[in-house]
Image (tube, rainbow, N blue to C red):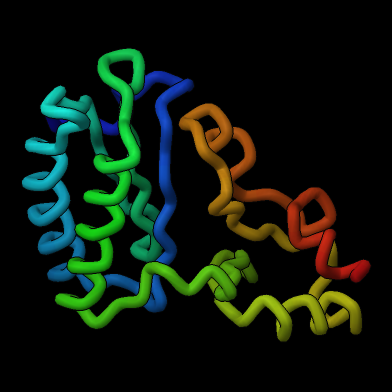
Length: 162
């Protein structure tokens, strides 16, 4: 069952898909129609899931499910991944390049390869107070609190000192 994203509780499970490029207005409408249809009928072992999505910054898709209603299963997560791969193929967008890092620079989103990005940080070209998107968050609560965070507080620190 599709519900408004804002109605998901703080402990709702989420997945964040980062696009390889910005969505156009037409694409956002297509994405909304496609995902609304999928989430309206998304199930886990024939149990309806209470789910939603949000498109953020014309660049990210956040899918959430309220596990207080029904739990997701491995098969239902596989269905979601399959749907996102299908959407990516249909639109010519890569949602699965985990080496692509997004950061906020002068109010706009920039992306780059993890290795190139960490080199820029090591050289001091990108400062450690620049905010990145932490697409590893797994709940609505984490999403609200730590989806964007300064590099110095992020998981990328592990790669800088390596």
